[in-house]
Image 1 (spheres, rainbow, N blue to C red):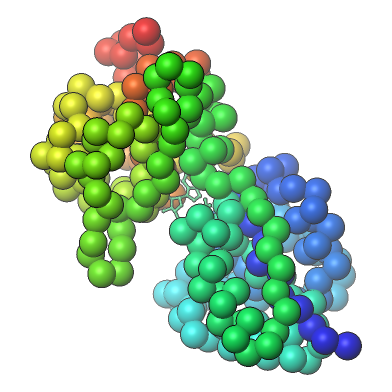
Image 2: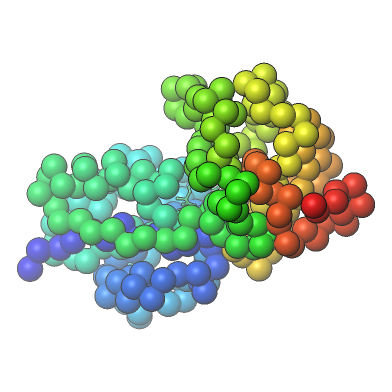
Length: 252
Ligand code: SAH
């Protein structure tokens, strides 16, 4: 029997946000390769005898090299195993799912993907924040501030596009990010929400504006994993529960 690799989105970190399909698929797999951001309570759904390999930073060493993970998936699949590659959020949103699929397919290994709720959408839901609020935003752009080659999204284009922008992996240099955005034409008063561990029981968030973002992030102590939601839609957030910002912030 041929093995197969399933690229499974585990959602933002809470087992309840796993889809029924994801649950069915992972319970049918013999081997799980589990990323950092996957909720630990999800591991309790493994059938007895499942081999669980933690390939994220918490798994042991600093970070398991991507090469090693790829070869591990291939090895198990060639042994005829059903392999679940569990990733936080959705496997195709900043999750390397595309690269992994291509690499495996080139080697003749069967692959299938199961989608998950990506962090941006979990953040919107948590805050009652309509990312594409009618008449306010024409759409939503998911961007990353952190790339291997140091390149940036077209911030000027985005500033003019009337889209909600959700930034992943932006917390380590939030001051630089805010400066870049303002230099590109984003208004200093643009409302911004930062949502840490969206979709999880220990979610925390702040609402700020672009020019106060760096200071507010620093004083809140919020860190990765968090998404930064930029746009007028943030004014329409229904749940803003940070006392420190509530006094200053008036939801329109
Ligand atoms: N595939 C994932 C994203 C992986 S990139 C997804 O679809 O959500 C890792 C980045 O995702 C983090 O740096 C952070 O910006 C974001 N992220 C992941 N889980 C998150 C969560 N529960 N809350 C907020 N941001 C999260």
